Length: 291
Image (cartoon, rainbow, N blue to C red; front, side, top):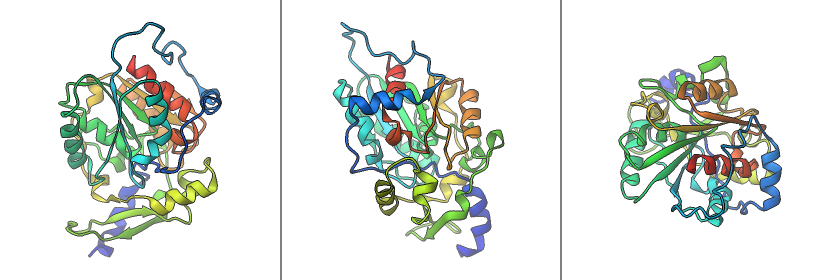
């Protein structure tokens, strides 16, 4: 049954699954790491990326981190540790990876349990989830997209991958496995571990990338072709990090989505996982959104 639909599925995947990076063994970013990563940022508005100044007494917002496909919440380890060291409450959301509608509603209910303002951060497919989940979530004050999908209403993740004239080869490197209760033609997709390091995380240590490949979580094909709902970026201020060397979501598509959302945009020379290879720059952007 699945084989019959693989042509449609492969086309739909188009770099879509918004991949995230899972790094359970990643160490917290050091000051040197953050300085080095910051040096890699281009077009970085200095005024936007400053810290809370001395004597700033206003309680800091809760930062909720949303991973994408082929990963889990541990991909945020370095970013979470750095933010916690600065006094931010941090929660790393466990994304079900079943589709923007389902995952967005699950996130919306999760956010409703948090008191006070929220900075909502999404990586890759996680961007589609925050785009849906922040709609109707009054405590969300800012959105941060890290090499992420920011679809418009009615747009699918697969279609978002083609924006700006970009192209990805992700569809050529998928491993497909069934899961219980899958609808007709649906299945879970993984990136082939043999190509994962060079496709997903070419600028992180090879052994770490291999560990990420072995422990990746899949996303349902339905996640690629389910139309997105009303985008939260229409009414909530947004920040966007473009990964200039991304081999999953084309950088051209990232720039298109950032401009469409009216986001404050920075660019870094990284793979699809800047929260690992340029964690200091990611922390700076989140800090700017939290101000």
